[in-house]
Amino acid sequence: MNNLKKKLVWIGVILTIWAGSLRIVYEAGEYDGWNDAVSYESCDVARRITFFGQLYIVDRIF
Image (tube, rainbow, N blue to C red; front, top):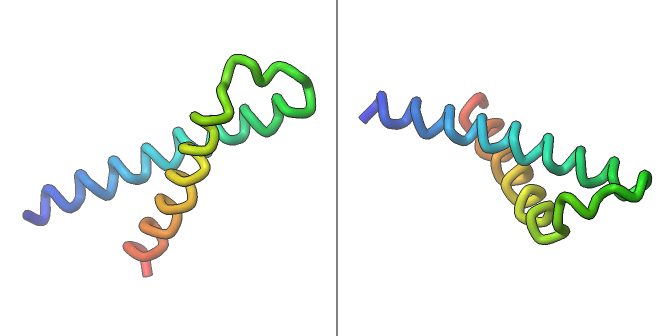
């Protein structure tokens, strides 16, 4: 059970990093006008994953 918990934490960390990078790409693209490659819906999902992922990681650490 403890091993499964560690795997879930790492999956959460990886998803948070991925979503954060997607979010950065989208928000940078808003200023340059090349954000057509990343849809708004996927960025919205990425924002939620980033937010809840950060809450989860902080909850696990503290």
